[in-house]
Length: 470
Image 1 (cartoon, rainbow, N blue to C red):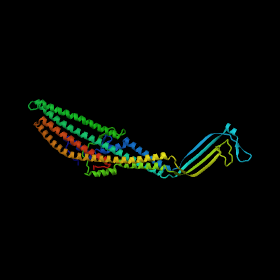
Image 2 (cartoon, helix red, strand yellow):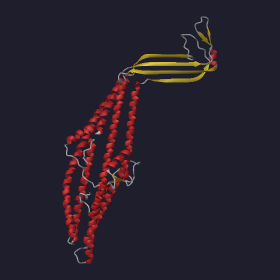
Image 3 (cartoon, rainbow, N blue to C red):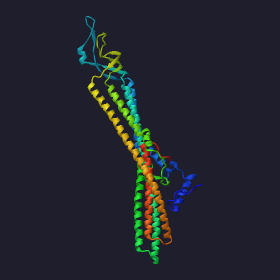
């Protein structure tokens, strides 16, 4: 069973249309699912938020930035793996013949042949590697710094998504405010037209007390209303363009928001301290700052550890062969042309550039301390954002309560004047005064509802957690 719209803020035809729309929604005639709405370009707030998170290129860039930082974790972890170099070369070789000397102790090459003739092929392959055993905390500090960097990047990514959500809500509520004002002004034009028809009829019959001045006053009122409608239409299109920009170029181009009226969000009454605690616990920027400071501190530990030695296992393997060079059989001969050798040893590598390393460690420590101070500074700014949104929320709520009463009173005034106008007893000044009073109060009331919803969205953004119950 469908009920009519709860707030009779428009003419009966508008109320009937809204009631029929609500009935269709309730009975499945119109579905709110984004896939079905995509064909008509009508979206709810949840649909728009989902579209923005799917298509916004800024979020895609943030995801790739996190992936880039995550790759640094893999790089830091793989520092435990052996490192080294494999070199292989191919070149022409000279012809070298060896003959025993009288003591049969060494071989003597023919120097002339070696320098003048290149009669063979020479190849040499050499492998060197170093396996870290103990680095005095260098690798672990690098891994922890990179892991903290990933968490900081994730926090920044979540902050970007939260900021995007807030901006989508701003455009959404701005669109609804403009549409409500537009409907209110159209209703006002109807009353102005009714008054103009009454004045024109009276002037044509010449039997009443209406004058040209009354007609001009109504025409001036019409011009004012039409100008305001133009301004409101501009705001509506700007909000629509903002939604397109926030969703991204790959999202839908035809965008309209759902027909639900602009209504005050439900926000439980809580003290400021509650929201301040929520911001410290759940706001993504706080998490990002915590891990950013941790990353800087671990980077400082890494730079300090780089001043310490490394214990490693060093290995080498060499193979060389020259087709035109004899291989002398002597334990003390160093033959670079024909050899097969290998070696394995424990090594202690000690850096000797202590001056530059110590300076880099001091710089990294200063950077970490700066990051800690920046975190404290940012937390103060976040606290201000929470307080500001909380104050604006309470002020808008008080304004709504006052303006709701004023709107009802001005509506009753306008209704009484319309009844007099139907009987031909109302003066044009009464009509225009009642219209201006009602539509001023109506516009201010809608603005207050918009400001309240926007303040609730800002409080959600400032705390990092949902503050509404609807």
